Length: 97
Image (cartoon, rainbow, N blue to C red):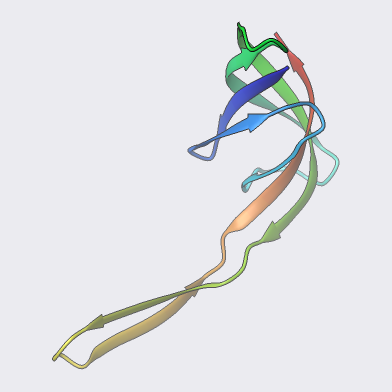
């Protein structure tokens, strides 16, 4: 059985036991979270319907730095900034219909 969950504006295909990296979720390591599933599918691929997915927060962190370089030609304008996106690792538990 697997499900499609949406969190942080993105959708993920999850199955029990998967570890997914999602946008930052408030909570400590070891805390239980519930993710609303858009759809759930059985083992044969049939649509079961809406479901809830329970998971456990495994870790929090920040991704690699991305360099953003802006410039305008002939105007002597240059600007360099960096960005590190925060993330949360969630281990998927059971999918309840």
